[in-house]
Image (tube, rainbow, N blue to C red; front, side, top):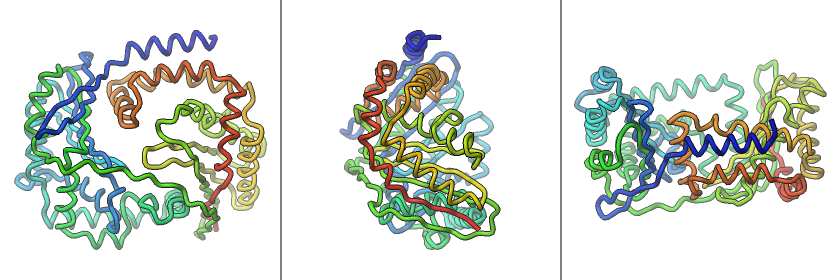
Length: 429
């Protein structure tokens, strides 16, 4: 199938699938954005309360406190406790789950359409009266410490966390989301109470909602819940840069394989007009599995690894390039040097026309598959809004990818020499 036919089908399907709109609700004189998607295909209801600049970026000197707070909000209400509250949810096929990333803190509710009034009632009870008790905190701390201890035998985890310490030295990104044994031990009940007070900031809230419900009905139903949050002033998201000093850090363990994680700076803003070029370049270098430059050179030609990947991550607070491979101990140095060589050559000479054509065919053809479900569409709409991009950006991006020339792509690749400044975290025997 020709690229133009693939592009036409992709854009046509996206037009059918794209139904999210940006609306607003005003609470306590604060305008709160709502990313709303009406879908009558299934009798479902979804609500996500996303607090921006509220993830573990805000842990400061108490690593893991945001993650423990999220887990505590999954422990039900103080009145019912974890088991009884969970039974109320389960009996009506309702789920309420709290989680956090680096930048965001999210409370998500899912239910059948007929149960959404009860689901919202239970959510309000949880927000008003979370199970902030010493018993709950002690239980969660014990479980978290046990999980961290188990991770000490996860060699991938150890190598990856060690790379983060190199790349993001002296920034919140150097810390693991789950914290450390010492930091978890030091968390007190008042730390959780203070964290929740600052987390539930109306000025940082973005609502993602939809399902088989009309917007006016949704607005009326969620207003009592949103009124529980106070405007505390919108907090500004910081931007962090990769440590300019490169290094190679070795971890010694009783292992039969070498785990090699590598990374570097990648200077790009989340709203950069060349983001489509980054997507293509990253796909060609190491993001496409079999067929990628990394896989072709390191596995197929040299037989050094079972798998290898690399990719660029472009977030609002940071951007970087990183990758991973696992190889035999005796091939450790050769594999590391080959990574350096491949990246140097990629920056110097760019991609080939064959690689570009293959990347276009896959990216243009697979895009609709990433937005075929309701949850995928919601997730994409949120990411676009959060990054400050229009909701029809993917459609424009497809056209840009389809028209991308090899010369323009290689000029872009050659302009990002910073990815050659690699740091390595190697776990070996």
